[in-house]
Amino acid sequence: MNTIRKYYQQGLPILGMLLAYWISHYLIFFILSVVLLLLLLFVPKVSKQVHSFLERILNIAGTWIKTSLFALLFIVLIIPLSFFLKRQDKNVSFVQRNHSFEPEDFKKMW
Image 1 (cartoon, rainbow, N blue to C red):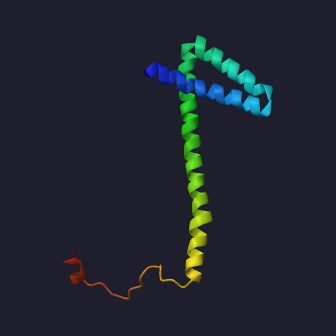
Image 2 (cartoon, rainbow, N blue to C red):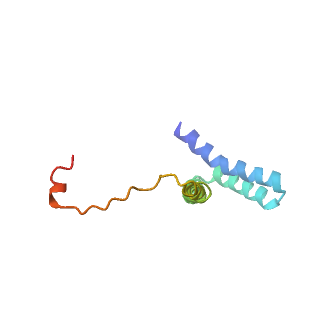
Image 3 (cartoon, one colour):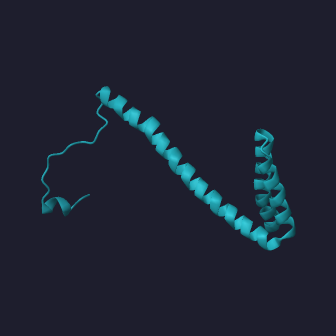
């Protein structure tokens, strides 16, 4: 089962490069997919190195995409929503308390 999963994960970049070739008609994608396929089939040591390299690349890409999407969500949705609610004069901000704390306030907090 683990071997099938490994070959499936290694075959996905080949399919991705073939799809990129089919869409863009750049010959480099086709050549890279054929070379990668031949390496994965006939040289097992290279297969392991390619697999670990692709895992690292996908991990970095996932981190970058996640960070950029959350930043975009914050900029596009949360900041305009806060400006809109402030213009509506709704009380959605923090409660301001003018209270000086004394040691008795910390003895029984709940």
